Length: 189
Image 1: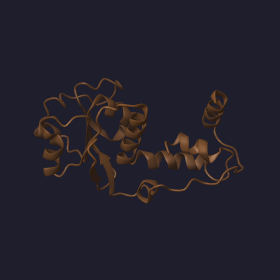
Image 2: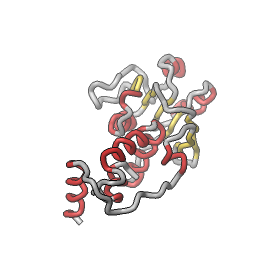
Image 3: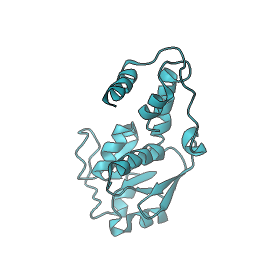
Image 4: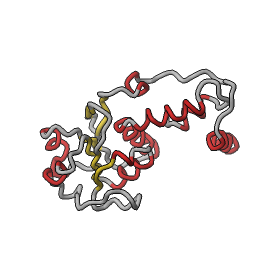
């Protein structure tokens, strides 16, 4: 198992060759696989959803975990403001915003087209929804599976998953020697 993991890492790290060994993956969701917006994303742990009309260009993060995830999935350029608890990455646009004492006026001042938060203190999601701002509620993960699912949620909500898949398919898509299973792992599918 460990040697298989190293093989995947080696394939991903070194790039791709020129012959196909596996068949392409099948899409699990037309919207998620196509990268089209609007898209509806699961939000919160109560079965709620949020609809995002277009690729977000101005994201406000009210959660340190969400901030790190945004940058990890490649959506850092879309981040307009992060809360006062976010300390990584160091160049994130840290502000005085607080998820613990959210201020609608302060959040709206950043003109966000998506807000991501881990808590709904002060009914942030409903208040921002009334203002027409979609809010993705990503509560604290309770398992490793939850953490991976939340990374996928953030990537889907920001359009980062599609950008990453496009980059990888150019390097490692049909015609490469990288097995499709490793390709799917590398892009988070």
